[in-house]
Amino acid sequence: MRLTILGGGGFRVPLVFRALCDDPALGVDELVLYDVDVDRLDVVAAVLTHLADGSGGTPPKVRVSSDLQDAVAGADFVFSAIRVGGLSGRVCDERSAMAHGVIGQETTGAGGVCYGLRTVPVAMRLAEVIAEVAPQAWVINFTNPAGLVTEAMRSRLGDKVLGICDSPVGLFRRVSRALDIHMERAEFDYAGLNHLGWLRRVVVDGTDQLPRLLSDPQRLRRIEEGRLFGPSWLQSLGTIPNEYLWYWYFRSDAIVSGQRAAQTRGEYLRSQQDAFYHLAFDSAAHETGGMAPPTTYDNWERTRRDREKTYMADSRESTESGDGDRYDLDGGGYDKVALAVMRAVSANDPQRLVLNVPNRGTLPFLDDEAVVEVPCHVDASGAQPLPVGPLDLAAQGMVASVKAVERTTIEAAQKGSRSLAVQALALHPLVGSVPVAEAILADQLQRLPELVEALPNR
Image 1: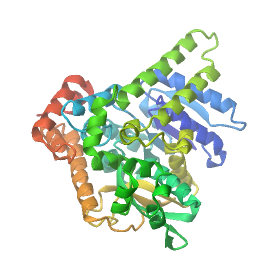
Image 2: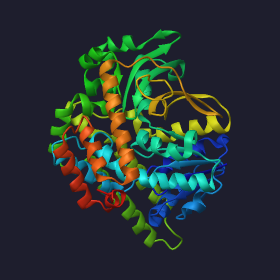
Image 3: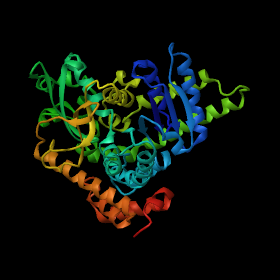
Image 4: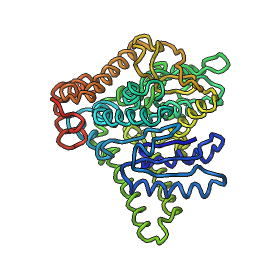
C-alpha cells in the first residue's frame, strides 16, 4: 500500500513514519514524500533513515519527489499537510491581527481567515491532481484551518477527503486519566467545528462520568483545560471546551498576553525550525557519505520535544496554569488519528474517531454539507457522523457564525475576491469591525505574495 504525504519536508513528518514503523500490520510498504522544498525533503529523509535503522523490522520504503503528479499517482492514501506561505505567513497572520488589536492566532479569528484565503486555492489544485491521477486515493487532510480546507476540497473529492485534528483526542486522553478510566471503555460526546468544540458527556457502561469530574475542582486541575479555564467556569458551562476556546472566553486576556509576549508562536517556531534545518544542512556539508542520520535525528527529537512543551504557552502563561501535560510530549496525535483512519478504511476495521466530515443532520442548525467536527463511525465505506447531544444556544451561535465565515472565506478564495475577503474577516466574531478587517487585509497583501496571488480581484 502506498502513502503519499504532501508537505513531506514538514517538521512533523517523522512522527507519521515512526507510527508506520510501529504498525507494520497496516501494510504501508511505500512512503512518498512530496514538497517544493527539496532541501527540507533531504533533511526529513535523513531523520527517517535513522528511525528505519532502529525500527527492528521492515519499515516502508521512502521515496522523495518534487513532482506532484509523480508523487500522487498510484497512491492509496494521501496526507495533505501543507503550509502555504510557510512560517513567515503564520507570523504575518499573527502580527497583522495583533497590530490592529485583535487575537493573533494561527487558526482562530483573523489568522485563520487569512491562512484559509491563501491555502484554499492551493488545496484545490492539489485536489484536482489527486482526482485526476489517483481517483482511488483517500485523502486525509491535516492542513489548517482543517475544517475549512476539508470543506473546500470536498467540492472536488467528495467523501474521499476527511479532515483530522489531534485536539479532541488529546482532550479525551487527559479527561480519561483524570477520571481514572480506560479511554477505550468510554464514549465521548463531542461536537462543534475544528478548534471550536465542546466535550459534553463521557459515557462508561451507560453512565455519564463527566459530572463527576466537573464537581471536583481538585480533579479538574489535573487536566490542562481545568487549569486553563478554571474549575468555576467549566462548572458553569457544564462542559469542557476545546483548548482553543480560551481565545473566545478569555479574549481580552489573550490579546494582552499576545501583546506582551516577546515573540509570537509563529516567530518561535520559525526561529526553532530554521536552526534545526540549518544545522542539518551544515551536518550534510561535512559528511562524505551524506548526512549523519543519528545527529540529525537527535536534533530533530530535541527540537520536537521543545516544540510540544511550549504548545499554547501564551494561554498557560496568562492563566498561570503551568506546563502542558507531560503525556502529550511523546507525540501520538495527528499521526495516530490518521493511521487509525487508514486502518479502518483499508482493513475494514471499524473505529470511532472524531473527524471533520459533512454534517448530514448531526447538528440540525447547519446544512448537511457543512463540515463539522464530531465522532464518526469509520470503516471501508468511509466516515459516518454519529448522533450527538444538542449544543446550547450560545454554542450554536458561535458555530453558526464561524461556519458562515468559513463559507465566505472559501468563496473569496475561489473567486479571488478581496471584497469577499474583507467580508469574511469583518464577520468573524473575534474581529467584528469592517475598518479592522480592511486594515488587516491591506497589511497582508503588502507582505505576502501568496495572498496577492490568491486574491487578484477587487
